[in-house]
Length: 446
Image (cartoon, rainbow, N blue to C red; front, top):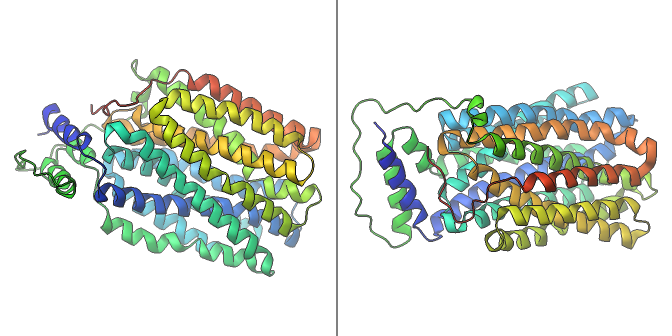
């Protein structure tokens, strides 16, 4: 039977560790999966631009290609968190990679819009579940004093994957009529990587301990302690009979009195940031083409804009432990407001690239801080559920955003579109101020 003392002992031992090669393995293994996710999401923005010309698609049809994936992500994020709290972080993480990797590879074979929409929905199921589960998983290994920075580094793998998608979009998609098919085929890589994840990474000791599997949890922590050159004198727990089954995570618990305000702030943040991010970045290549730049040139601009994500993450990783989660998130969101207005009114190549780079820098720095703050909000039995539902609410916005772009462009062009995105970022700034500051605090266990 698990006691609060058992869970606290595991947590204290994890928080006392320095960053070791075992932490690097957890971060790198999860980060590669994260980068592959980003590559898949990023590729669709380039593929949409190519298919619009090749299949003679109307703007409403191309917007559905993006939104079908995000519809799957909304469901996947909500279910993935619940499943991870019940069955474990590692297992669900691997399954999600397998689902979206296989579906992405199959997308290379489609011959029409309907089949592509179905497969993009399935891709979204896996992709939506993976991201909140991965951030929860890594946060549960990270020592409290550096947890925020580690999660920002995890989120920085997104920039690597998005950059890879921009390279593929620039070199592969325009190379032939079947370039978009080859791009999808490259997206099948996660299916193979899922096998490595399933057997190569340990389960979260915090989750194991919360489920009464204290001997397994302690053995994993001892392995991390050994990597740090420490010998644990904590007696190894023994387990007899069936392990204790922790209460099932329930979505209603996210709205209990102690968590209600935090959940409200997080859901508003996730909705607003998703709306502006996906509305802008999924459509940037297509918007540039509509402004008179050819396909290759617009893809080249997008590649340059994408590279600005990396310094955004680097600055956020430093500030999140220096300033804290709230101040860092609010600052980067405020920068996103200004950058969105700048991009909407930019004219000329230099201004377009500069505005796009500013939007990348501030928006992706904000994402890093948001992913760091979200799992910290909830105790271990609810952590993946809380992160998953916040992400799921955000994915509703990512469904709506691509569908909103064509009519907004028709009403007022890029200036109106990016003022709307700026307004959503501004609402997110206010919501960020209502988060509880968790810098340096131990994760809540019960």
